[in-house]
Image (cartoon, rainbow, N blue to C red; front, side, top):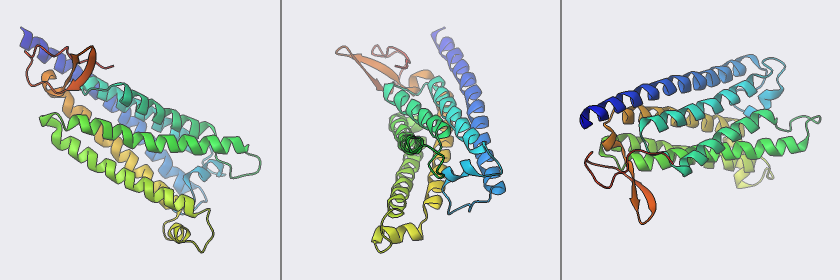
Length: 261
């Protein structure tokens, strides 16, 4: 009977994970589709102009905002899929996911300062909100990759996710250098890098890596959901503190069960 209960819970978990995976896929797919159409219909350069400038295009007005909001919904849906899958999604992961979504929403609502009629405060909010989103998403993926690698059945997926995180950090570093170099005198070394790697191109690279990270997180969620609950991980109470670690047997007396905190 206990074994049957575990199997039933695993089936329900997998079904909920698939539902949230579908929601996330639709949201992220719409965000990517909208961005692609916006690049096609606007008059801006698809590699040289920053993505933020597309908020001021005469054709496709509002599409950038819609894309960023859909992106934020996709992040929250991915988080929900991970929660349902049984992967331990603690406070750190919750804060990082919320900060990513909030940063995307703020970037959508507060446009960058590319024209004189835009309040400079709006541009600052847009800048810092984008920075928060860009930094928190790889951090979220890295946190979950570390936990996945502790579960033998998910170790390969966790390792692949960790490599994607490294690519994300690398793309962020290149984007940061090109962004700073764009504001420096033209005779500086960093400025020469900005000429070779324009801000618009490196920014789009970050976007692509972020989409890949979210797709990898969905793969992790669905693979975890198909595992028996004891193999996914649990919280273990020790000295009035709860730590997460993988459980190797459903009869382990230490395991308080799967619980998100």
